[in-house]
Length: 220
Image 1 (cartoon, rainbow, N blue to C red):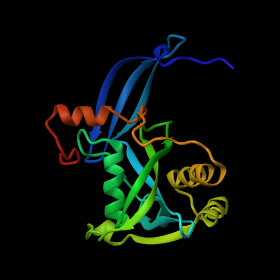
Image 2 (image 1 turned 90 degrees about the horizontal axis):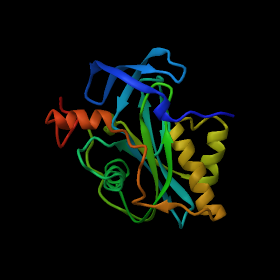
Image 3 (image 1 turned 180 degrees about the vertical axis):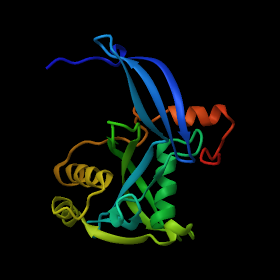
Image 4 (image 1 turned 90 degrees about the vertical axis):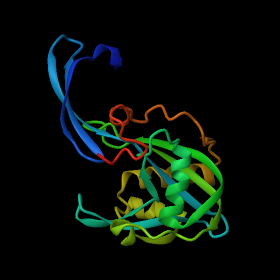
């Protein structure tokens, strides 16, 4: 099977079509390897982090349940959040999200898997961490969406079964659950917690920072 490098797809021009607090939409004019020029609409995102928080004594992971308007239903997900603070590294963001969404801290962190969620139209990429050595903290009061979020614990085997049964459908959660199973039950070697996040989106964050929208890059 033949492959083409990104250098074969030359971006001739870019037009920003729409800008909102957590996403933007742009249109690139791209010269294809055969010479044809085509428009490609791309949703820009900050990227995100998620956490498989594993309680070793119980063999369970922390999951959150929240309503997602995009699909019109509540979903079982991992504690997660957007990389929307200028200059913040993914591990620091993951620790904050685990505290805010689950009221947990962890003494051991590794990188599990990186997920490009919708590469056909969006540059979002998510780093999923595995957190162990858990301890409880006081979960802060959240905003409306987070206040509606509930926290539960699920045995890892049950989480795998729920994904295969179509009960866990969030792609980040599915990837994290199966990657954690490989590490925890089959001895797979994860990457370090500070491994380079090469796919972390840059376009939206760089533009916001050039415009002086920092440290909270959502505040347009």
